[in-house]
Image (cartoon, rainbow, N blue to C red; front, side, top):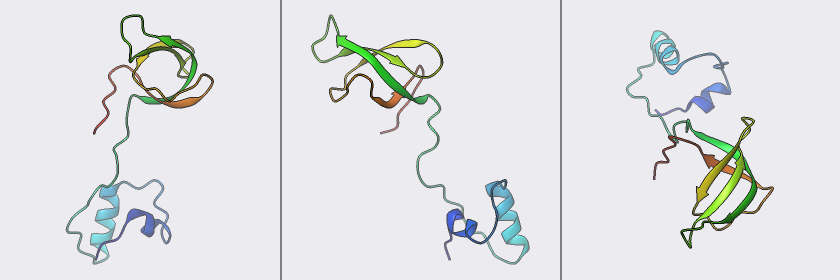
Length: 103
């Protein structure tokens, strides 16, 4: 039988429990845990929400823009962007230095 952590949380408080602790507890009450599957994306460590303050055409490329973005750390960052559907004063996801986005 497959059960999800979300389903189990409807019946048991798992807020401060790790996956290993849950697996051990289920085994101790008589359930055999054959496999644990992690679904969804892993946390993206260098992705934040940024607000585009201004943008202009990149001086050396037709399809790029140079954006001034506030990512909430107190400094405005200059980011070169290939996206076309954005506006000033709008927020969106922003990959900072060393960001890797899986395909």
